[in-house]
Image (cartoon, rainbow, N blue to C red; front, side):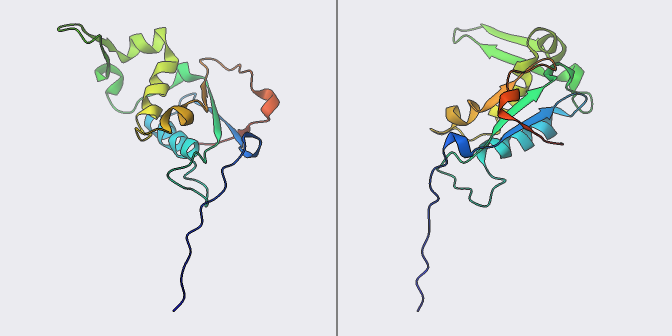
Length: 146
């Protein structure tokens, strides 16, 4: 009888990880968020291991020009709560998009990553910029088509 062994991949160094750049202009929020979450976790690699941070870095530009499908632009609300009774705040999508467009993508992607000890390290590899400019040209990011 042959015994099968389970191997655990070695943890990659930061130099081994790739950088991807995504242009969010006129893209659907959910489609970008799911694909970015997969890249950040490393699920697109054959060496994926759930308990290790195997993912790559992602830079998203033009976050202010993201779209929502259907009637969500008029219906979606972002909710914050201070912890005190009655101190709930609701903001419509349009207001959040005008004030802080990075928050929309940040919350959508963070909600698709499991709540465990790795989450903060995975989210740290995400860089979102409202406009076209970004300071990561030195990393030679690869263009990723959604």
